[in-house]
Structures are given as C-alpha cells and as structure tokens.
Length: 466
Image (tube, rainbow, N blue to C red; front, top):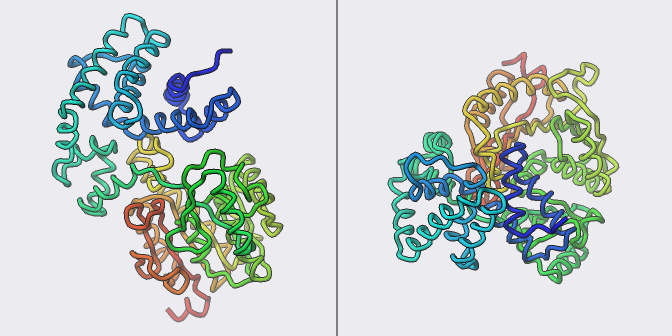
C-alpha cells in the first residue's frame, strides 16, 4: 500500500466524514494514528490536522468564496468541493504554503480522486482566488462580511456559523457578545489538563519540566492551581506522567463541577451520565485526599462504562464504582443514597465547537428542544437518589438558555430544589456568577462554553413549612 501524502490524508478524512457521518475529532485521530504508523513525521501530521480542522471549521466561509468564483448555478461534485475548500483554506489561512503549491496540489488531487477533465476548473478557480488575495480583493470581501454586528447573515459567513445559531445567540447574549464569542470559537486553544490532588508540587514541577523538554509549552490555567494548559502537544499519552495517572485531560470549565460540589470527605457521589469520567475522577481524587468517600459512575453503554473504568484505573482511583445504567430508568432501592448528585446531562455541545468543529453542522433547533425534554426526564428520575439536604450540581457543555438557565429554573420551581450560592465554593475572580449559576464563555473565561448550577435538596421539615 502506498503511503498517503498529507493532502491525500486530509481528503480521505473529509470523504469519510461526508460519506460515513464520522465525527471529525474521531476521524482526525484515526488518520493521524495511521499516518504515524506509516512513517509520516510530526510536522507533516501537524499539517494534516491543521488543514482538516480548518476546512471543517470554516466550511461556510470557504463555500461562500467558491460560489463567488464558480459559474452561477454550477453543480460541484462533493469530492471536488472538498478539494476546493482545501485549496481556498491554504490560500487564505496557511501562510507557510505558497499559493502556487496549494493550486498545483489541488489539481493533482482532482486528477487522482475526481475527474481529470475538471482539473482546469479547479486550477482556474483557485488561481483566481489567489490573484485576488494578492490584489487585496479577497481581504476586502472578507472585511465586508463583518458588516453590522446584528446582521446574522454576514456573521454566519465571516465566522462560519449557521445563521440560526448566530440568531439564537444574538437573542440570548446580545449582538456584540455574540460576535466576540464567534471569534473566540475560531481561535486555536491549548489542551487543558488537571493534575491529580495527590500529586505533590515537586512531582508536578518535575513532570512539567519533562513536558517542556519534549517541546511542549506549558502555561497556568486561569482559575484553578492544578490546571495547566499545553501547547505544541503531539501524542498526549506519551507525555511524562500520563500513563502513571498524575494528570488527565480535562477542560478547566469542567473542573469547576467538583469544586462546586464542595466535597469535604466521606461523601457518596452519584454521577448519572458520567462518560468519559473526568468529573467523577476529579471528585474521587478529592475524596481520597480528604480521607475517603465513594463515587458511583454510571453511563448507558458498555463501551462508555469501559472507558470510565479504564480511566479510573489509570488514575489509581479505587473509590470509583462503575456500572452500566440507563439514567431514565429508576432504581427505587437506591433512593436517598447520594450526598452529592452530578447531572452533567446530554446537550447540544455548542460550548465545545472549538474542539469538535462539526457539531455546529449537525445540531438543529428541533434537537435543542428534544434535549431539554430529555434533561428534564433524567432529572426527575435522578433526583430521587439524593438525600435530603444533599447537593445537586447540574451542568452542560453548551451555550443555550433553553438547556441551561431554563433547566435551572425547572429544577427550582418544578422540582422544589433550593438554589445554593456558588461563591462559597469557586475561586475568587470568576466573572459571571449569578448566585447559584455560572455560564462560562470562551471569550470571557478562556475555557470551553460550559454551564453549571448548584442546588440543595430540601429537607422534609423545610418542605412542610413552605
């Protein structure tokens, strides 16, 4: 088998996503692993990753550029459209690639994977775009796309975000905040990692120094002392301390859940939708450091629970009990068993678009409404596990009031849970805390988009008094 070239690898990823519906982050990882096995060096694999993610992330903008140069009404075959997107992205965003190389390589791909007779069309379109870029015309077009911050169409094209999402955020956040958010979601962010509570400061410093020796740039997190941000990573699993369980990949926003839980030691924690287990493991480590306690980690499928168990073993957390369970099916014999209940529920994932770039193309307004109903159904069942006086942490990795603030209102008004202030549990200096709720935003907090809310279950005496 002939080894794939970088651009062939990208085209194969895009084809697989288009034809098989594979999520981009999975397809990219699988291809990068294959490329490494076939001898592709680190620089080449970085090129594959950058070009693939860029084409997916900016698809709406790239298609708009293609439309400007193609004949009106032209029908472009999917593989040719992918090749054109790749070429346009290199011309606009990859300064290290000469425009001539972007055009020539696109022509080669067209002849090999498309139709030889279409190579002239591809060559002409890309060279026209390259000439206009040099003349400043494309820059003028892109600048004009900024338009009015309230114009969802121009924002959609400029930031490659579906119009309906732009419109929803404008309504919920306002026009100016929406544009800042859209820009932040296009920025390349570092990998956020959490060091285990049991890892001493000297051990941590030794591991970080080892990472630096491997060419990784290490920075501090924004709010939590055990959070670090890594840039220039290649293979996470090969970095010092990973296999030993000294640290794990987890966004700083997600780390806030264990902080908000306020664990002091000895608690029983239920995590009802746990995979891949980051929050459960964080709580388990805090409990071990505080003297004991148990985390029950549940998820729907055998594959997901297997992943949680694997992660917990790597992190040396014997106090994590993993079980396969449908969060919608009640288990009456476990009523009132949990001191803390984590409900990080299925959501639209709009807060992690910067890491999973094709989410924005899959989610629909109908799905948002369906997810909100699913969240309510899970909560109605899960809250029975919580003791009177116990703590519920509700969280999602999205930016949408219908799945966040409105669900928090449901928990309070229809489920009778008491909002409990977050400021006693989270570090000082975090902007945007609204009593028991916090919406983290990439352009404000430097994290994923993430929502959490803290509640306490009323005791029976309190309920009777009210």
